[in-house]
Image (cartoon, rainbow over all chains, first blue to last red):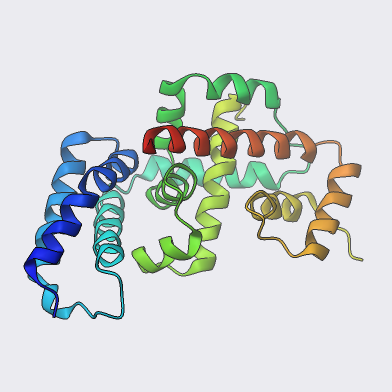
Amino acid sequence: MLTQEELATCIESRRDRLTRMAMSMLDDAAEAEDVVQDAALSAIRSSSTFRHTADVCTWFQRICLNACYEALRRRKSAAALEQSLRLERLWRDPDYTVDPERVVVGLEDSQRVRNALASLTPEQRAAVVLHDLNGFKAREIADGTGVALPTVKSHLRRGRQALVSLLAGEER
Amino acid sequence: MKELTCGEARDMASDLIDGELRPEDAARLQAHIESCPTCPRLYRALVAVTAELTRRGSIAAD
């Protein structure tokens, strides 16, 4: 049986790291804090369902990851989807290419990187932010979000491709 | 060995960056990149984006 003390210790030891993860996914400090707080309350409420075969901190992390993912998905945007489809077509065009030096210059501008990340579809943003910025493995993202592993990899691939095009500034 | 299209090669590039491509597929991708006029620049840009995001993530975690 998981004690409230064990869970509270885990929540507090992970809170800063998970809030940073939520912030990088949601790009909104207040919402990130709310999501982690709600995840903590959810973990406390459902602690009786915790099985000791899993690590309690990993279990709490998964609850947070899922809460962030759901918060991001609620922001579905028609513009992001339209952009995603346009860029996907572009990457299938054998004549399409970019100047990698322009991408490197774009990467030096933090605001441009944030804007580019913000314009991805929620699923692509979650995959890129969790995998590349937060160091999660694709399998961990799949387990935490309930999305199939090949789908997570596809979102990661499309998200990275979109970032290249957006930072190259050569969309057409 | 069947040659890759640009679309296939570009999709496989992400897995190569993550070290998740089977050796035979990595060899096919390498062969495509060596002969394609457009994909090498996209591949270099993908590597740069992934490396920079990973670098920023490591800094934030410190």
